[in-house]
Length: 190
Image 1 (cartoon, helix red, strand yellow):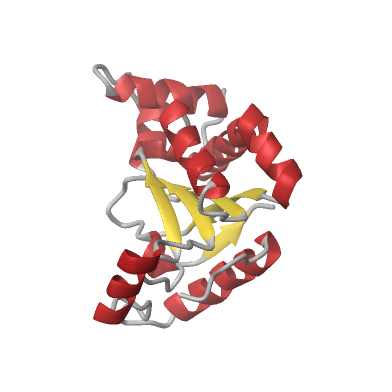
Image 2: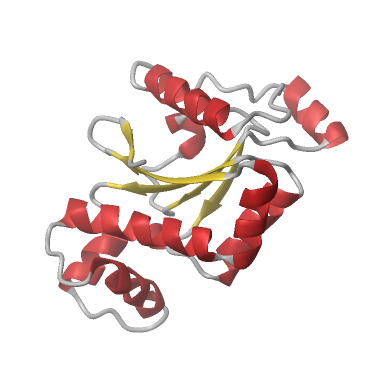
């Protein structure tokens, strides 16, 4: 594992290097061995980054960043929108697990963003599309709308009182990124 006390800058570099390996990989090179399962079971987890991303089955953070067991604390929800549950998860990982980097990872061809742009969903899906609409306003371009949605989630995290305290105490960094489904490349927005 070896991710104890990575700074936000070191964690960001590790994500970038992992994404570069992913671009040419045929399988996930992350450690999923019996030994790492045993070690993380006995010693706990020390994820070097927190990743909030969409539930889309094409978006697999552990693969995208060439990570194994115990390396990423992943929070998934359609449209990578933020509410109190996601904020609580970020607060936990930053405060108790000492992860110094939070990445909101949006993606191209996002169904939730597409639904917010083109339809009027009902039921529980409406809670997600309503949040996305707050982020995108009158934007009609799907990729730009996805970026705006990521930016709003980053702002919500940064505006959270508890997150601000964590940021002041330990140099927590919050940034946005876009995963390009066609190429596999992650573009960091900050």
